[in-house]
Image 1 (spheres, protein in one colour):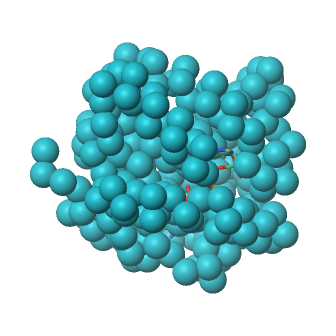
Image 2 (cartoon, helix red, strand yellow):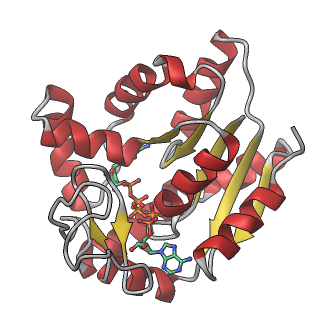
Length: 214
Ligand code: AP5
């Protein structure tokens, strides 16, 4: 199944895309994670993306597309994917249409995860992230050992863009650049809104219930 998860920063896209991917048997492909991994590995793409990410700006389309195409060409993505953080603007949505057309595939569904701004600010202000595997933790879903990732024991950190000024800027960028994609996919009959407030399993069940029957 080929799915897109849309939503503002902090809506829970990463948290849920990871679980949704396991439910539908497709890889979770998150452009933010790919870019952070490229930066940690000190690659050329990581260096080109770094300052945009820290400022809460969108990384230039050509950089994101380069990293995304490489990821989608991996064998595990040949039968489907759960995209998280992509597309982020109209040009990226069109580029994805072209990539899918080239390989004779189409999108199955787009989920818009709805969460009020006040909840987003609270979530991002208390989020801890594993820079090795990308797992995230919060006061309502803490790690078993304080400050350490459950999966690999890596020390958890506050993301560089999770500070109050950059969170506000990311929300503005989302409203201007990404939110218009809701209408783009609604017009094509692909989009369902899902309430992203609630327990992790509850939100996941809502998302699964919104999917077209395979
Ligand atoms: P990216 O990594 O995509 O960040 P984002 O969109 O800002 O989203 P977040 O990762 O902050 O939030 P999320 O929705 O995944 O929430 P999470 O699950 O962590 O992008 C980062 C940067 O990379 C961008 O600013 C840009 O520079 C660049 N970039 C990436 N993609 C790009 C693209 N396509 N084009 C251009 N630039 C790009 O949850 C948040 C917190 O809430 C966590 O602590 C979690 O535990 C908690 N939580 C989640 N669900 C619940 C719940 N139901 N109840 C309580 N707490 C919850």
